[in-house]
Image (tube, rainbow, N blue to C red; front, side, top):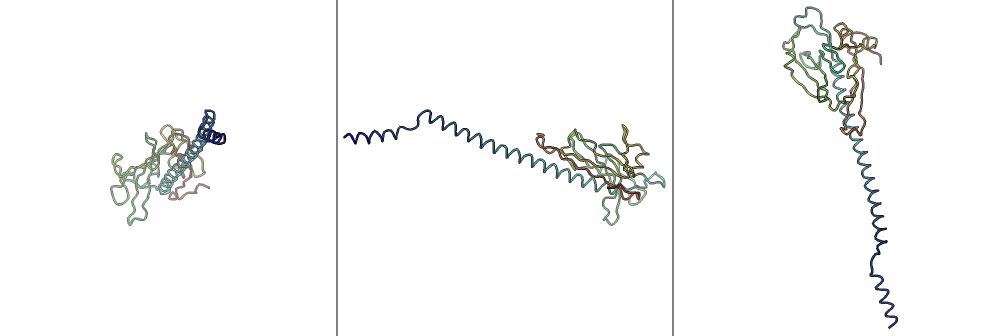
Length: 230
């Protein structure tokens, strides 16, 4: 009987469960493991978000730079209706954040025609490309009214207000032409041989990822003058 009592006593002790101190220690350990797991996952998520935002910003900036470079390199002096025998300069308007010019973009067409192009930053901090077509088929050229563009589209978004000037205009000796309050003067515009383009894009609206900046100095081969050195 004594042996039976001892066995029943041991079996009863095995069914008693966890004591309060044991339960508290278990909960503490589980909470520590949970905190570590949540912190690790959150860190990976933040890193992924930053990398994704940086990648998006780089792609947007590179695409915009490709388009601006393509158009600026196509810049051409033109003979305009009412302008006599003297060609009009490549640039119509040259400001730090606005550029309006003449260019032959579609040179693969059977009968290429020039267009008027403007790049400007709008109120939503987007870089907008606007085009105006010619209204005749041969020089001297006449362009559609400024109120009647043929197309208008954003080529870059999320340009921060802290970004520097979008365009810096250079003469043939690489010297920057300093614009006044109204942009470059008519005499300065005639001396523009290249444009230094700087595009900054901030794809992360939270600001946790750094903005991306790309820069390129674009010469204008059609002017027939000495090019800007590398």
